[in-house]
Length: 555
Ligand code: C2E
Ligand code: CA
Ligand code: CA
Image (cartoon, rainbow, N blue to C red; front, side, top):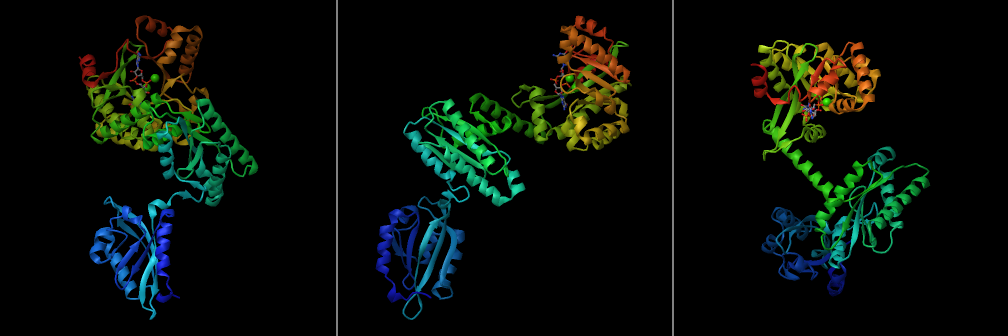
């Protein structure tokens, strides 16, 4: 039932608009549907592109104040209201702000009729959609948008402090196992746990999902804030016990020191806090990490390098190259083959160590296309070498990512055919790792390789995971001893004896032994006492570009 005009205390409404305006974020309005006279809370004048708090809302004015794309919709709605087709107005659309930028508003109102029941007034309320997200009903906290204000004020007051960015470890699992509703409860209770240990000048905010931030302007040293984190964790542990372990979770924290002297702006601050939180996660979760500029530089460096690697892959592998290091057959004193080693040079011309860029290629999956690139380079090189040295073998390092995430066997058989090479011309080097035992696709790869006829070399033997038991299962044709172990054997009696037994073991399972990292004649003589089969090291040759290798070994 619409209120009739004569009962409408318009003057009281106008008074309310004036009195309430300073207490409200919202704007009240009255539109006279006969005259199009429009009145709005005074505070709207500075916010939107409107001439004053009273004006004619004709189409020209609407065109000025409403975002162009929404104009037609709003004109139609007002027309329907004036024609009596609608008695309610409820739209979300954009006004133009005083700064010329669109502002999303939620405009709701109801129609008041005159004594004949014809529509006379539209009165209602406008609020800004973007502004409304001030609190989060799930955690019951003030949301991140409000942190900045407090942050800026505190920093302006030259306060020292900390920001802790907290995150529930494995929150997704809670949602998955116990349902979203229970997850929401955990979010709310976690906020309470954190809040329960906060003191003066320590403020809690909800950032997104399962992330919180505490602005701590009470702690005066790292130890204080570390204790705060410990108290938070204790409160959470206590809560977990209270639920009877229905739910189990931990919290990680990234902590940044805020000093007015060298604290960057709010956005940078939050980014550093996020970086720190990620570092805490990387360090195994349920722990905290203090922002450290050096770590951050290394992180940024890796990020830039990854970007460059990605660009390189996109641009036809620019900057990537294959080098070849000779492998000597020590039994007959002749060149046996070569190991393919990947090289990368930055656009600025500086080389990057494989130890640095290969993990990045693996993490990003780029090792798959780059792995194909290196395979082709290796086969091309092998083809050329075999023209003069028919039995020449080229080995290629294979990353576990290629084994697990790509059709390496398919690639290999295609390339062998393409280059007209026999499978025995190649050799795949796989680093020993627990994967051989735990991942069936790893062992499957090894047997497919055998079926295809490509020899397998077990790389870096003796450095990390060594389990003689699985040697029998993978049955490698070659076992390679890494330079780090060679050095130990050259310098310590125990490791030297161990290496002697390893050579014997290798021979007993009909495999061959290749020892890496031999740099001098003395080292060679000493290692040869152990009767290995192959030697790879600077003594016989460094890794060379293909052309240089041809020049050295084909003439
Ligand atoms: P790796 O497979 O153990 O390769 C042997 C490494 O020892 C090479 O380092 C080689 O240059 C170095 N080396 C050989 N002889 C000597 C020596 O006498 N003295 C010294 N000081 N070093 C010697 P590089 O080229 O830096 O490669 C490092 C690692 O990067 C390789 O270790 C391998 O794990 C990885 N890598 C290289 N190329 C590829 C590739 O194409 N794919 C994959 N997945 N990994 C690769
Ligand atoms: Ca290798
Ligand atoms: Ca090695």
